Length: 112
Length: 114
Image (tube, rainbow over all chains, first blue to last red; front, side, top):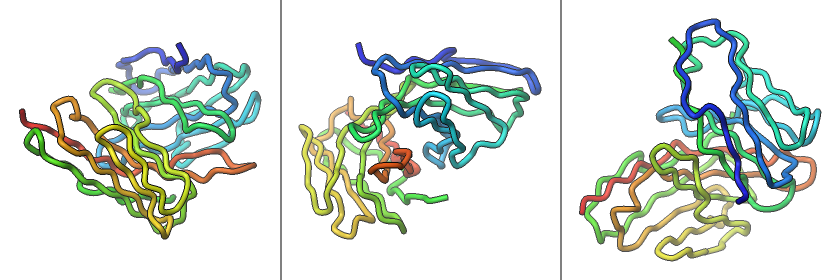
């Protein structure tokens, strides 16, 4: 089944403790993105990647890092999480000029 | 950054009623998308619109791409309880060299009373 998977689905952590949220897609898509969803704000793009080793900032990149060493994986890294990063995070992937992005199931992160 | 204004923010309707929601933007987009998010899940694409003026249906759902390319609406006819969820509009710039980034509206939360 064509899909985007994320792990973990739920995470509670404390301020300053580094964490990584993984994202993997099995559709051979070039484009991958991370979004965060907050009440009243919709989804906002954090980082995106147009292909392996090509990444760039989205609209809200502060406090996040990403890497794209393989086409299928696009992990989101929080080096020193803070409470304002408590949010619902979505990974998405798409081909460069084809159907719209497919979203993963989401990761709900709480930073205490 | 760019923003889309989506309205209404929430709706509480009776089963069988029709629903209408819309999005407006100060920017032009060449693609408009409508997604639905069920509780605990990621957004799922409902309808994609690629041409100004385009009117597209998907079952009980109908969406239109505004002529000015700055707006879109989504209608749901004869609502049923499983229509409950959050509906998002999203604008996208497509074409060579772009990132395919989506700009999302704030979402419309729909509740349906049986």
